[in-house]
Length: 132
Image 1 (tube, rainbow, N blue to C red):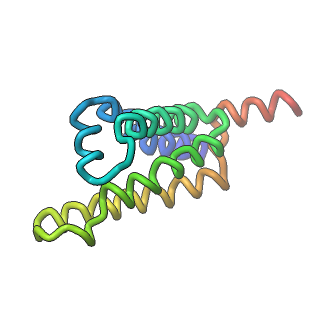
Image 2 (spheres, helix red, strand yellow; image 1 turned 120 degrees about the vertical axis):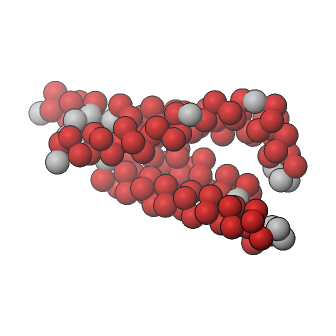
């Protein structure tokens, strides 16, 4: 179990650690095109939130807070950028629906981490052991 929780944290955080595209003009432009207000500010800010949450979960340092950061990132991104219900092209509709459902599943995992924590091989567990 100890290594399973660690492996899960590594695999889960990997997708958020690759959010460097949030700092690119292309990502900002796409978000603006999708109707994101103040995309030049909010898209890079969402990248910082995603990176902070992912590092927190990966290291198991205040992982519950890190999971809430991921929730804070995923909810608006999922609703604004993967609104498949507003896409007319059937191929794009299907692709956006898949992205929407992927984000919803990641949201579910973040909610689990927010309640269950990082597990035994984490900085949080080490801190608890040092206090005891």
